[in-house]
Length: 391
Image 1 (cartoon, one colour):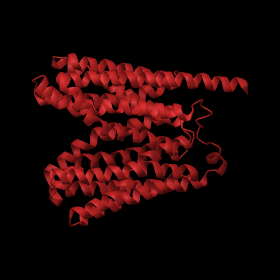
Image 2: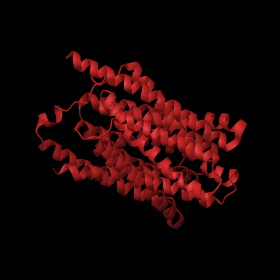
Image 3: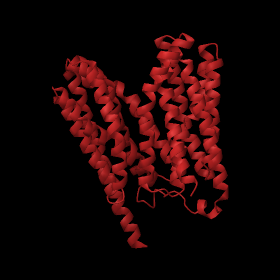
Image 4: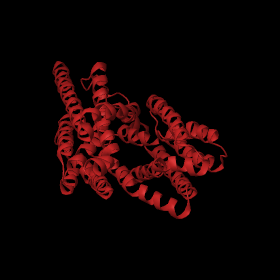
């Protein structure tokens, strides 16, 4: 099938799109438009708030239409429009408008890629392999973006992002053309699994969403404080923190691929429990670590935990929530809310015990989140078995 190699290419390009933009955006705002730190915060807050809303509305609309490629094409064009607007804008208010009007809707593209895969009947392993491609983009792009900014200035990153956006437009147009050649029934007879059919009630889905917010918050908080913990808490050179983050990011790719293969042998809920156990071990180990070699060794557990939450977690959402677009968008929301929650988490947990207290608090939240997912998932599985027996 000609579409098959194009989907991984699309995943790579969308991963590169945001792997270049996200780490560079604050620097672009400061260097090109003279934004103060406070102004950067407000601009990013408006951008993320708009993205929060759009990431639910657009995928839900795509689910109703059972069409994900046309919205994906619009997102690709909006990404191109964003780079043009950022290049031509003369003041920070216009940049903010561009980010809200163009950037926020364009950010839905990644969710639409995975929704299109799920709608087409992709296996969990295929979803996680494409997620591994996105992780590769995030490993490769930030250092390249940093080098480009250092050598040629922030404008060079905008040119690269524009080129990637053009590539996304071209790939999506080819996917649309190929999709028209497929028989209509091959696309329409693969509706997303409904929550009721999977044995999940609305309350159960809501509980799992909250549990994922908790585990997402632990990952965001631990990453945010790692550099300070290594340099201030452990008294080690900052180089060790960078090396630890690089090892975790590199190991996440084979972890995603390996977990994808295991989805055919083990239930997704059981794999989520395995990942949460790895996360608990990582956080407890980080609270006790004192030597650089132990810091690096613990990144194996960190990579397994992150890969499970990002890969198995997204696949689980698509299985328990009706509509692959809405399911993927809702999963993205758990990451956004988790990022918001790290401020209070860090502030409260660090007060009595310093940096180790933050990691211990993360261990407790990972335990609560994992146990909740396990209990609700097992109950849903029993309920689904009961419905199947009744039929």
